[in-house]
Amino acid sequence: MVRTVVEPAISDAPPATAGAESTAKGEQTRRLIVDTAVRLFGEQGYDKTTMRAIAAAAGVSVGNAYYYFPSKGHLVQAFYTTVQDAHADACRQALATPGPFVDRLRAAMLTGVETMAPYHGFAGSFFKTAAEPGSPLSPFSADSAPARERSLRMFADVVEGATTKIDPELRAELPELLWLAQMGVTLYWVHDTSPGQEKTRLLVERSAPLIDRLVGMSRFRVFKPVVREMLTLYRMLR
Image 1: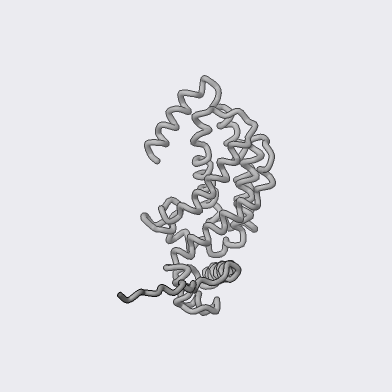
Image 2 (image 1 turned 135 degrees about the vertical axis):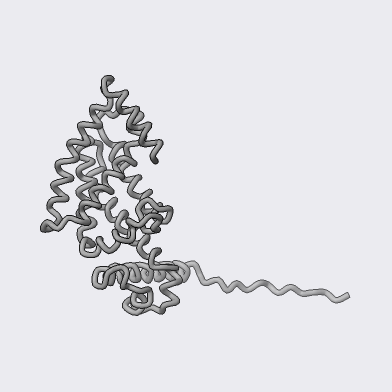
């Protein structure tokens, strides 16, 4: 009988440190591609910017660019997520301690405007595509879920740390309603041609106290039927 000798398996896996270095390098390349894409979107517009042009400007092969981002739409989604992460970082200190709802809301919405400011020049080209029904670039699309969820978590933090009394049923829906309000502000910002988009900032400054009043009124018995009816309609249309 022939005995089979099994040799010890030799692993081709790189050391853990090499794996960490590879991951870090991959993240750097990924970030470089996103930054390059954003720059070209601003210079050439979204429609005229190709994946080939992005790869060339980033100094990577076209295949490598497609490895990280299967399409230009995936690049935009990565950009959305990056902006939302930057927004969360920008308002983290303002939301670190409990406080009045109006102050937390104003801080969240104003830092959102500040975070988007560098991208105003080409935001309109995104909007043309994102506004089309069924567009994967729409903030309401399934593809945009990661960025949307980040924003919803931030507005949930706004509500959770608010010392203002809020109707419990409204409180449960409020983060999403605030996100929708932020979408309205963003739409206005896209079309705002005032210097430094100062009118958008004015919109936030004036609307935050109004939203605060409506939220505060929601807990009074006389307004509860109206609040319930509005929430019911909202859930039906969601």
